Amino acid sequence: MERVTIADALRELEDLAGALDNAYWDTAQIQQKDIFYNLISMLHGELNELAKLSVSDHYMAYEPITAPWRNAVGQLKHIHGNLDSWIIRTKTATILEQQLPQVIRMLTPPL
Image (cartoon, one colour):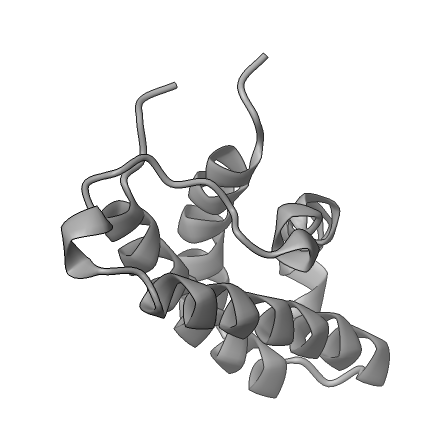
């Protein structure tokens, strides 16, 4: 696995935040909305912690800071496996189909 810097992670996570927000509005079921809302909340917590870092630290390797975000892999995989049935808009589903595997790889520790 190639090294992901904090700057790279910030870009990926900010893009994911926008896509999850769109997905929240695109889905019709309250249970699915709850899952998206929970992930959005965890992601905002992670982004808030990353925003506290100095710009000079952005070259360093990314490691998840908040415990809830470190444990979000299962929910991200669950969403990824259900995109076809949960997301109505093709554009949102396509964006998440591309972004989720990248973020899951960032959160999965190397073996």
